[in-house]
Image 1 (cartoon, one colour):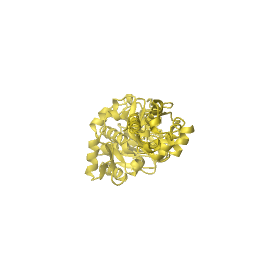
Image 2 (cartoon, one colour; image 1 turned 135 degrees about the horizontal axis):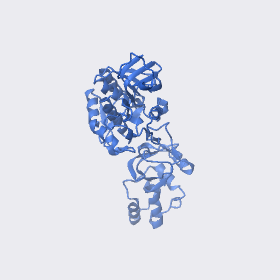
Image 3 (cartoon, helix red, strand yellow; image 1 turned 180 degrees about the vertical axis):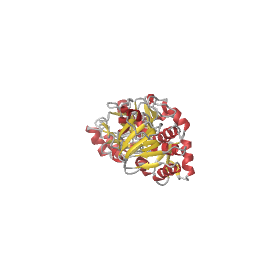
Image 4 (tube, one colour; image 1 turned 90 degrees about the vertical axis):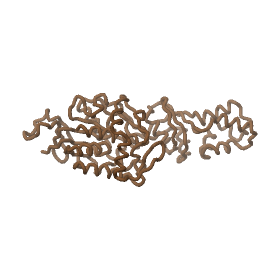
Length: 407
């Protein structure tokens, strides 16, 4: 039998942050993870350079059935607090775009900072450790020598462990090749907690039929766009792929997309195409439409778009001859293009999971379950999902730090 003050299941961003915070408070902390190494999502994030936070974090960049829940944590442990932490370790980093902060060198630098903080708190970390059962001590025939503070019994592959505080920091099922699973939701349901609807998020879209054929012909073409769904609009780069649509624009809007929803895309966000076309007409420009549009957009894209049934009758005709209806067709297809994706690539490539453990059942101050003293949920396992751009890491730091103050 073994007893520790706090057990944290999940050695990812939130779990390690919580462990370091609690350990440095003097709590005896054990972190367990079934994977063979810690921080796998940290290591692969941001193309290997880890977009560890964003300068512009506010609650508005997070989705939740309870939008007020994240406010307290984001205020108490801010992006500036994490920036100060990495600066203490002299981490070299840079701002990329839209407030996104990346490591100059490698994502492993962030993980090493977290592990160093855990070492300061004398945190014990056990990988390749599976938890097969969790029970409340009150519901078990516990050993007589067990401290009165013990609340939970965990049956692990390393033997039975008892603790006063249990933190679930297991994330969601996104990117299962990194060891992700829905285990945290199983624990929540075991303790009669509600789990909201789950869906892959920050994920590329798939297309079908003629739109898929078109996307495949344009695979690798990227351009800045505005993309809109459910009255939410982002301005980012869109990338055509062999499966459909990707790039930051697609990933951002996927947080808001539900099956059957249409996406509205403006491929010329900085141009009023109708004004441009009329200026070409009035200026007596004799160049072909394809040539003129290729000044504004990638040539491959222009050629493919003008070959669409809606526009192919315009190809090769002088711009001066275009009617109002012709111009309207061009504006519609280039600045108000609408399509309904077949779906998404799913958890296999999703960066996060939308939905999770219902936050109404937790304290927004401590992250403790209101009906289960000593049980905490933090990070992605909760129904709090951030935008692309470092927001989900900041949620991991903020929720982990807050829970670490109380376990």
